[in-house]
Length: 261
Image (cartoon, rainbow, N blue to C red; front, side, top):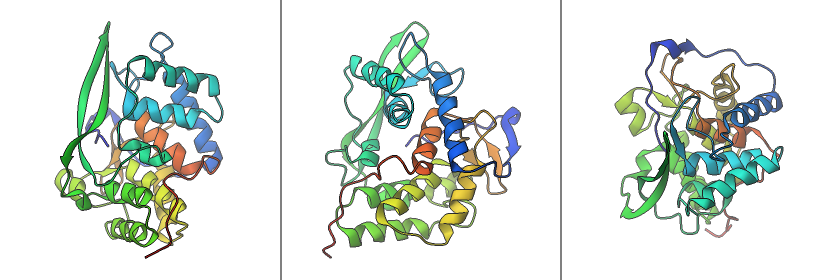
């Protein structure tokens, strides 16, 4: 996952109270994504006004969450990704059981695919370099809970991630260094819980925090401070993950679990 590190005073605000239910939030999120679509490129920019277009994770995720309500648009995005000769990332596909060999975790690399006028087409791919410290990151623990086929080990990863929850966000190695929480990790927690059939009470707070991070535009803000102040922009990746977590009609991600211990 890319950590978006915006710290722009004009976008500094306090998390708003909850508005409506999950269905309304999801619908507004999809409207936000559809409104970013660039018909000339067949892709969505990273955020409003951005010149960078990420094939993976952004457009891959956007196509997935738009497919139930706007299948034609989703198909155009998927076709545009393939037209650039990029067919995989190797990590984000864990959410849909499409990663192939997601474990053990490896480091990723950001690559430039091409440039079309002012637009920069980029993508993220997994390398062959092992990531020995992945257990220090809440998002990777939650992805491991989704990717691990052994039920006991998957639950162990999920529980390890929840120990990082401090009541406001996931305090992992990134938060300790940058003193900001990432919104997308809230979404991953809900997804892992759904996949594992887990319903700890703390999920209510996580869901509330995720809903509160939705901006008036319908998109989700990427980061917030321990005091609850948002210090980020809305972007495609975070919005797509939030929709995926809040929309129960999208299939539960991950591989089928093996109940053997």
